[in-house]
Image 1: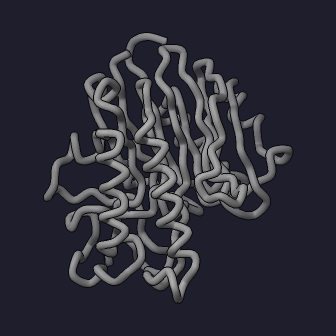
Image 2: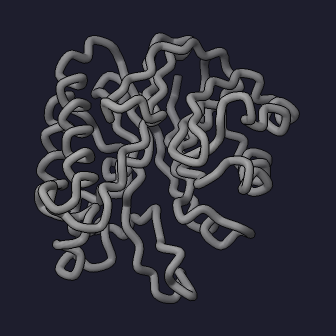
Length: 264
């Protein structure tokens, strides 16, 4: 693997239901590696053929019926490295692989955390914080070049949401979530590639709710999807793109793809 390599992360919200837009994206953008979250399909039912027809012959999946699920689809050879149970209940939320150049690629789907930001009232919120704490302990022991991508379900900066003031008590942007994510970032000395290439206060959103009649007109977005790299990987990054137009495609996910290009 040498030259420019494009790596994409996308919460697809059901890969079978949205396979048409996945194929369109792959034809138009031609990434080398696609990391999907929320595939919502058992491994035996994953739609391999559309990817193979487009030249993506290396497919690793960690699925679950109707919920969660992650997959890594690649033009270049990949070797499965780990499936970590950061949720501590065997949900399919992580898949890690090694790339030919030795970089570890970790694809994660962090729990959304429910609607109430209180672990006593809402156990799902506590599970989310505990998930991130387990990721933090893992991050402290990293010993190789690593790229961490996926739906983190947290918009950390005030500029990562349409209204910092109005979302301070809304799950995904509460102070405790932001602080917990910051501990994870600091534990691995991670570089946030999105903000590395698009520094705040630049607008940078990756998710818009289905509840809006016109998502673009209301533009109440949040940056929930991220790509973080250890510093030895970050120095090889040459660009980061968010594909906002994909939110307007037929039967869209509520998330859009994000992509970092590397000079490898």
